[in-house]
Length: 384
Ligand SMILES: *Cc1c(COP(=O)(O)O)cnc(C)c1O
Image (cartoon, rainbow, N blue to C red; front, side, top):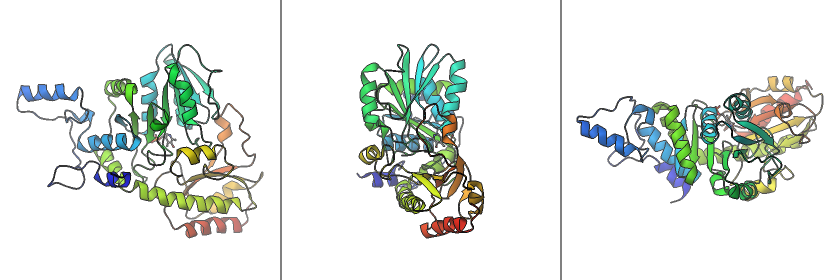
């Protein structure tokens, strides 16, 4: 069955039945005999889809776990209340006191702040490496246990060569954890490129409608057991309504991504031709760092791009003049967004980023001509 068809059938209940798995709100699951209770507890030990207690998820969460595991090409998926909770919970599953963690320098800023604030207090040492390193010998220690990667990079979209990097990590007993929020399991599948765990902030494209917070971590092989243990011990879960809304979002994941991609590419090319713009950062644009790797490893790009303006350009006033692009954090919903970024501020290595002010745009599902018209009008008003 093709992936597009599977998106429509995830969570299908026995017929006759509703097309969507129902929201089941429950803490306690009632039994009429002690034996039934005991049997359920025994079965859930090796089956995460057994309905046993609200904290272990109910019907829509179980359907979503199976759906994301399949989407990502993994063996098991666990759900979290936010993307950051999924990243923090996943990283914590593989490193503890005395261990050393390697993190790509271009990682999502909130992941970095977890690594810099919580991990050292728990006795974990953290080092950063540049996005284009595929041999980490310079940073490796005997106690290095895991590597955190993200492709394309947050905000600037440099593309790591994950097959090359994981060929290097493979014989060294390192667990490789990927933040796959950009690719969301549809465009990009880090588990097939040699990573052990793939984390998606489903707040973005899985939910897709700017009204859900959630995270999903999918593991394969030996990486499943430590993740499962940590999730159960920490009591991580996703509420049934959020699981339902995410599953509903998934039905149109491919269609939305196709439109986001087309429109974002049109906007990127349009920006590149403007005299006020010094650089457009998008992983599918020729000449972008790692563009050939993205072409080789991914099935497409999404609605994100960053734009560097000429030095001294009044970017804030430009963004304020936009009517269809609202100013806001996050992305992956149906709506267009813009925000000022300063990617160099949190990074340790110098990547020759453009000198002028930068903004990140999320190109939504509005008609692309309207969006370009909005940008054009903001340039024409000449605040800059
Ligand atoms: C948004 C995002 C997260 C965090 O997700 P939340 O649901 O906002 O906690 C993690 N990684 C990336 C790449 C993101 O874009």
